[in-house]
Length: 202
Image 1 (cartoon, helix red, strand yellow):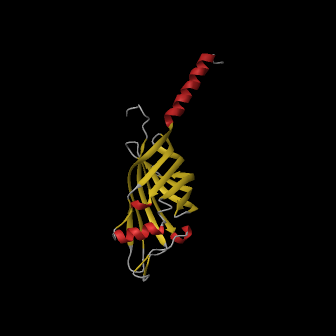
Image 2: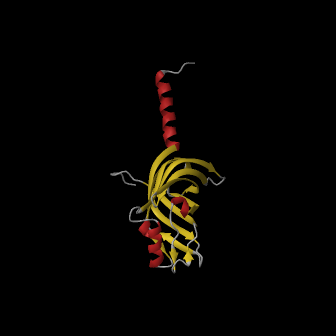
Image 3: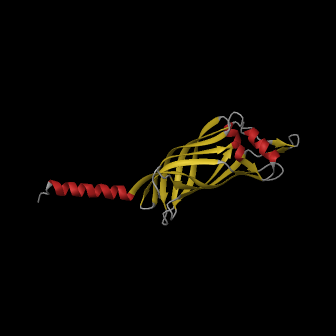
């Protein structure tokens, strides 16, 4: 039995509507963040908070589940790195990043592979470029991502980085008797919220 043209058109339109309903690519911007750098020294362990972060991205979801990363970028302002050890540690950290010439740490996304567990929590194996202290390297990150009940996205990341890979000098104190360890651990817990187009109310 042949379908009349009007019926075929109706079926095609219905399929298109379902496609747009189940898959949605949305732009997001940073809502809240908790981030830190942890490290060691020849005297004691230390930790600094990352207090000034910008993050945007575009993600593909299907029925409330994260399916793909289309783009994302993170900018960390070096002077927003605040140590629990006080201003002296802050100044040494900023100097290590050569903040006068390189005021920001920038991560740019290149690609990602996503796998889902039984609870629809996504594991993202990503490749991107990280620029800091005047040097850019390709890095791999493993992140956990989940779509929250209000439509926000939450990502958690932990990554170990060696300062010498970015040609950074390890900060020292007390006439060089105290030296910061080369490897640091960066921790992120970022919540992103959908960007509302101008003139559109939620």
